Length: 260
Image (cartoon, rainbow, N blue to C red; front, top):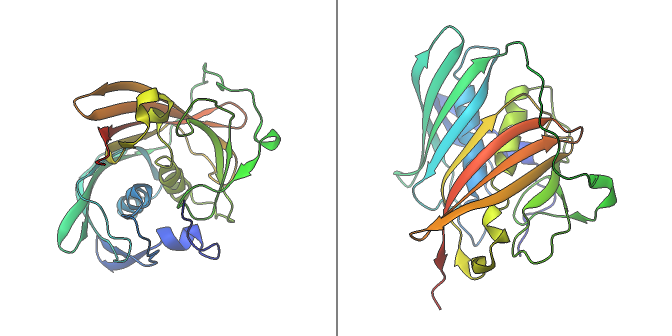
């Protein structure tokens, strides 16, 4: 597995240069022998959309279609469409392009904060992150991961994670870092048939239930749901260390045997 340089900051990688109203471009390149990490493009598109909404509105859902592999050696241009600003919701669409071609379409909705309701669900795994071994996630920048022990899986489906860098009190940025982390593993790794499969992301959705600090421990818990017609679907939940459900996610991936 390859890792990016350790001296690169995640917040610098996600930062965007504003070229014009609702037009942004990525600034820091991590040239790798792999396509651009999908979670990075997803998070940057969310930040581009967030820059266009009225103050106080935070993302509550984002859905992205990955149309082409990204080039890690070239900047990405993000164009935002302002579909609607209602009394408490804002809807945005973002098109991410490289080489003049679309690599990602993202739809996102933003909402003003309202009175919260109590959560009835509890954290699914009682294992505290401090009792687990630290590991560095493949290709991710500025992130610490601690895997919950899971025998007989080809890819971890339960992991504690957090951003290691000091982060400002910017809820939209914390949501973007959560989005960046949400694509790091796959729930399809629990399936015996997942070995030697192409698990490239087709589409990815995150529902943000409440603001969360991405520099504190969060547990990602993923579950395979269906495999059919060369595609696999999994769902997941992201919990805070004190057992609050912070976000839910779903992803559909290719599920083809690799050639050769």
